[in-house]
Length: 239
View (cartoon, rainbow, N blue to C red):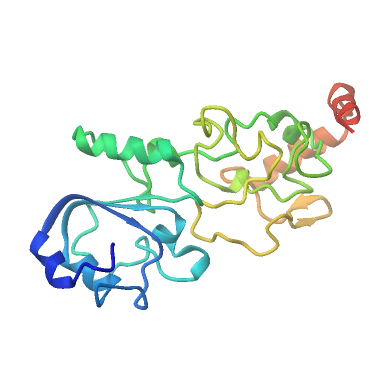
């Protein structure tokens, strides 16, 4: 919001169809001699769209995003749609705005995220999944081969998002480029020890989303008993 605007001028607008919020809500955020909360309260919106993890969860600044702002400043929650991400994928934003404009129903999860975009994990569609299944890990960032979970701390099995289904610039994603997923669409982002998967005797301390521990232990036990020469050779060739 340009600093030349005053709260009195904002109140004259009264209502908008879509109010897009970017950045973490903050009492210290002042524009036109008014705080974010006053400006936000002054505008009636048919739809509120929070874009980016700071607006949704509070993000790196440690504030409280709109996903947590269950107070009187937000008059109702049936008109809130959250699009987390650091940054949020532009095609996710375009999809939500298109759906609103065309009166399409947007089904939401418990964090008010569109299920169409966040009903599955970033692990879904990852081209490194075969390495994950056979516990063949990459030894560093930027490599084309190998899983990034066990030794590089990839958060894809714990993170809701369609990054590996709706590619950036229709070309790539973090994991395709050899960069671990950092879990930026989740409310606990950023985590400590970001590039580390905590394990106990080679078993992750936290199971991938939706995977029972007994089933995981069974599958990894089988995987450890095999050595897939084809996958190991591709890693050696890259080195």
